[in-house]
Image (cartoon, rainbow, N blue to C red; front, side, top):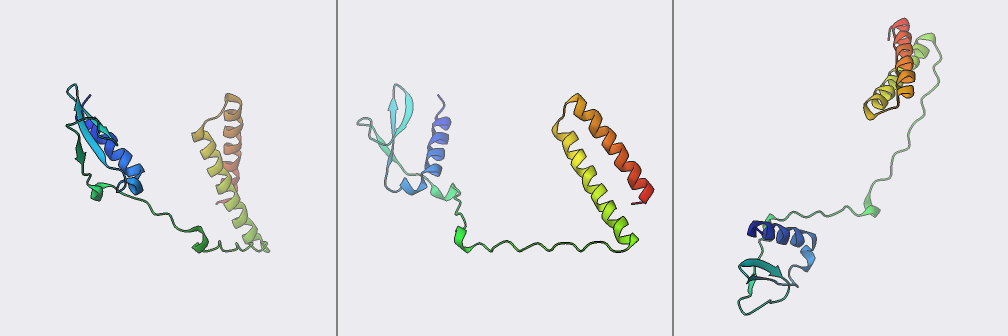
Length: 132
């Protein structure tokens, strides 16, 4: 096995247990010509390995108690005039078309595909009629 692979495992183990790094030494031994890394000396030729922790990235999560609460969403007022109703209808048509496109990209059965295509055609026709 390649010694670079061993070093990769060591770095991976140290990244996962960075808090234990100072407490648990790592030893390198050569057994039958193969470099072996353990947490205990495996023979007389065991050498402690110093790891470069400056190359290991860490993640510190944000405390949950200090996060800002979500802002309440305002409800849209009902459309009163014909122009407002037209704008609202155009927005809903665009939203429905986006949802259909998402569904078409994510996968569908043959029967669903026919229904999605028909619905998309109808929505596009409505958008042309409303001049959205």
